[in-house]
Length: 215
Ligand code: SF4
Ligand code: SF4
Image 1 (spheres, rainbow, N blue to C red):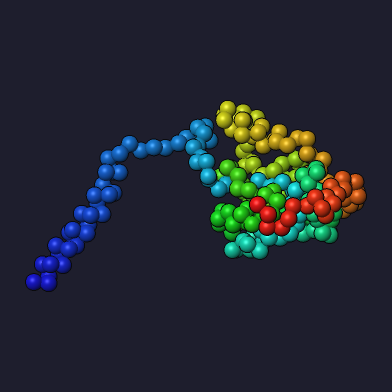
Image 2: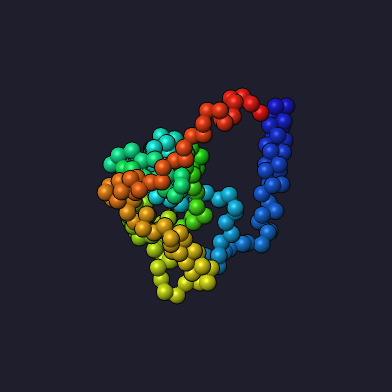
């Protein structure tokens, strides 16, 4: 009795699975001829990070939040935001590395960043020849005026139109902040920026301050 019941159950289970998978055997195969054809990337896709070095205060909150410990931050001294220029000043940022050999693209590092200078970008391709090339030094990228890493094939002369657009977007992004980006690892320059900082607005006299708890 149990023997036949087990056979019936096995047939039912296989049929239930096939009901889902079988239609795919007859569906049209979709192959994107990448990189000739632009891949579709969803709006909330988490690709390689985009990083604004000149707004990073080096607090290491991202490194602490990272579940695999693949972010390394180094600085020569404390940094703080100068809100009037939307710029971090003080010590220099000597190191900001992400090891993409172990990164999970979970985005936790971006959620804790107090200045929102780190976000997940939309690029998914980091073709390279050696594993150590996946350890990305964002300080070096900033010196080249770049916010994110671009795959090496994007340096080719004859690119498909969409790829040339993507390359030009990232190459031209924030051109007016290039000097700050390039010199964010220079302690002297960052110190001078701090001294030239516009002082914060003076606190209003006690009488004109809103009462705590007032609506
Ligand atoms: S995306 Fe996740 S795994 Fe990758 S660096 Fe950020 S916190 Fe770490
Ligand atoms: S959390 Fe943001 S501000 Fe702090 S070190 Fe990381 S990227 Fe920089």
